[in-house]
Length: 258
Image (cartoon, rainbow, N blue to C red; front, top):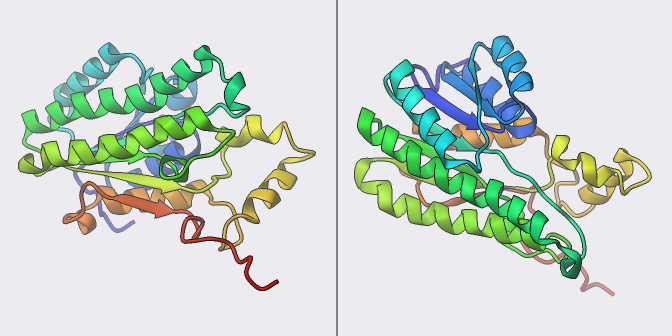
């Protein structure tokens, strides 16, 4: 612990599992008061007790719950310094078979949820005079398309552009907004995908073969990048996409040597 977030108050959505959980733990170790916000309240409650944070029930797709959470943060802590929009869902499959139900679910969580979070937490930051930092978790799929993840890619691409717009709108208040773009992360979010493979390891090996560094990311890999953008170390960075992809989007794979 180095106290990089000492005296900071942070909301992390999707904080009960995966990247969100790793981020909450890291933030707490760095001195932040962490609100573990998740639709899985029992898991959030158990983890909050472990890391010394506060659990809050939050369905990110419901704007009223965001308004209540932002108000609670000001009432309980007097300010809000950091928002990490980490909650997300994915649906994979053939584009023509993508249902309206799955499309709307991804839009509701991945895009609307980030919009509502930014909207109400910016208001809270301004009310408390905080020079805040917002980190939106997008994806490499928010920068390039994927034929079997059209809806996921569309929503994450929306997060990429929303981040830039929010950054421009809030710069005058000293509030920063950046996006993180991970490669595959070995977390609970891949559980449904793993069911389509002979084993989870077979899935991870296949994914790792597409990453120049030769491995799938761990939640802590992404959490450490989020910490950088949340801290004062990135005080001159806003509106930027930070790739945490092991070189995946650096260029074309070698196919030119015969």
